[in-house]
Image (cartoon, rainbow over all chains, first blue to last red; front, side, top):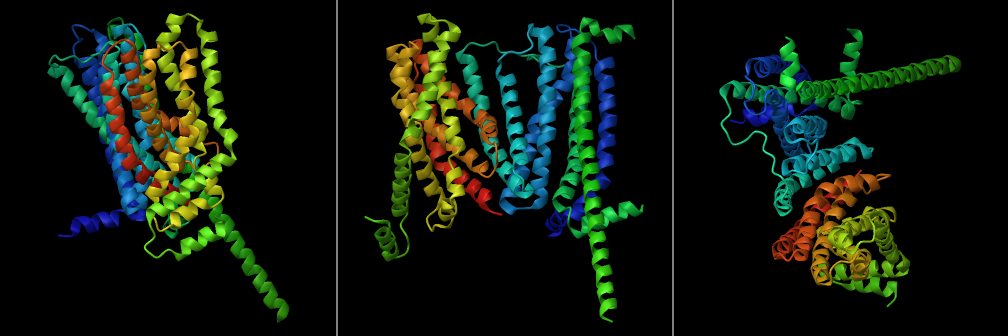
Length: 251
Length: 69
Length: 241
């Protein structure tokens, strides 16, 4: 009955998690790479050109999964931040802080690929569309969390402060989204709808979903790798870290 | 192949988008690896220094014992 | 009443200590501090005046153009003028140790923080709103829009001060936190600026402007309840070792 909480409790101990993450990481990375390659083949070669957008629509296969990931990573960060604030688990602090750069990377990709997609489709690199603006604000939220974490010298105190900021941010995020929507209608800005309401053809859908899965797997792989480094940085002076380094020197 | 690279005339938008995707994610993968190497070097250096200090302390102890004996 | 008698009357007070008493003492302290540095009040006002003076030089003095942008310019000017004061909101308290006293006090920290933030707002931002009619005149804001601008500012600036207080508490122990605070405040300020400027713009073009003002009021009430707790948590993180 208590097996799952017990297992979670054991897993939250840094040395156990360090080894666990090291063992799992290659599995996630390789499955992400294989799925991603298949999705790229499906998206770039097999899928027919869109009847309206020609081949430019092929940016969808990276733009949309990255946009989903930019929100997913923030959600993960906020959950870890909540756990870190409530139970003060060291591992949760590390995970929350390591989610931020990955999420920022996905947000950056979303913004740049969106811009590259927008230029041929609506003739401009940037427009103050509701979704684009929300994504830009999301990037600033990530940068704030990363900046605050780096500004505070004590790593654990920095992680807790940045976790609180991440929680403030997740309350703010829907407010930003709806206020930007309202602002857009007030100023009669163009609403950009690249994907459209039409049904997406199966030949385009499966590479998209497969790529979304691949990016999720990549996110986990990257998070595990980063969490290992983060744990080492926090726990560098502890016995398990010393033993680990000594082991590595012998090998 | 040429048609594939031309992307129906949108090559200068599609390929940079994919390039950005791979470059940013490659950076995301490499950055922690570099940080890890730096950190391991630092920790290893700290451990070596501590060991040196301990050896010196032991040496000076034995010398003192030798002098008193 | 001297300090000694004040302390003696505090000591004589039987437990449990009353929150209102602490709030009144804190309020008195803050107002006294503000009074001792009363020339500081002028800095944000001067800053706003400089920004507002520069705009016509940059954009040309046509009345129609200035009137069209004045609402937004005034809002952003107020927001920027608030930033330096927000950044140093808890710095003095952290350095002279009075923050620890607040943390150790038997009264709930969130209540003390709320008093602290509201007095800070009244001493640093309220003067800006007082001179707003003058600034609005310089930028040719239509006179019938001015009341809407003032109400929007009266709702938006305490909201910004409350959110800024959380961020200020988070950055309390760090150096060079000004740009970091601006970076963290931007996402929080976006909805506030949208609704405040939206109300002004709607009033200017003769549209109903009540809805965005009500949204601001709702957000302010929410922030009055929630922000002190977040701020108290942030201060605990800043002080703990």
